[in-house]
Length: 186
Image (cartoon, rainbow, N blue to C red; front, top):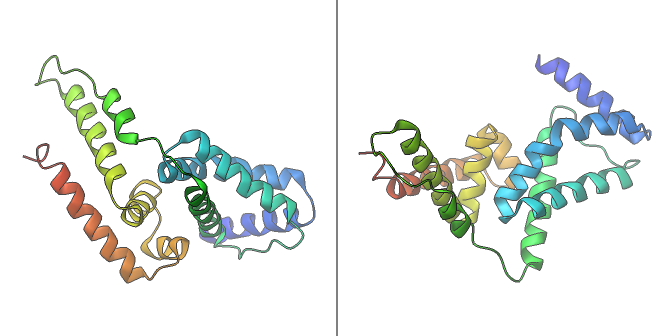
């Protein structure tokens, strides 16, 4: 299966380098949504996340003749490109909206404490708030590893840090999240 995926990626890369819009569209369709979600989680805005992801794809298309990521590492390349674009966005941004305010509005009113779906919604909202309060590097490691199902090695490549640092940051993130959610874990 892995070899087949690498073969498809190689075809997409070569097609894009040759100016094949269909190959570019396949790449875009496959990766746009998870990359936009990752960017949105990182910069705190879904609109900005979509814009950042679109900018990455525009850059790929505009520089397609020289674009040459390694087949088999295309996913890592794309996440790294989006991550770097997010860092650029954050540096340029002077004010950021607080996700905690938005998340707190999403918490459902508790009508019956025994209602499992209400408790689940509350837990998910609390987890969302806790993840957003993590330091940025811990947040990026947690989101890539747990929500985007990347391996420690892939996360290390995306963030340009060692796998051991990824493991340490993940451990710290989990510790922070356990403390933030201790009321739910009793």
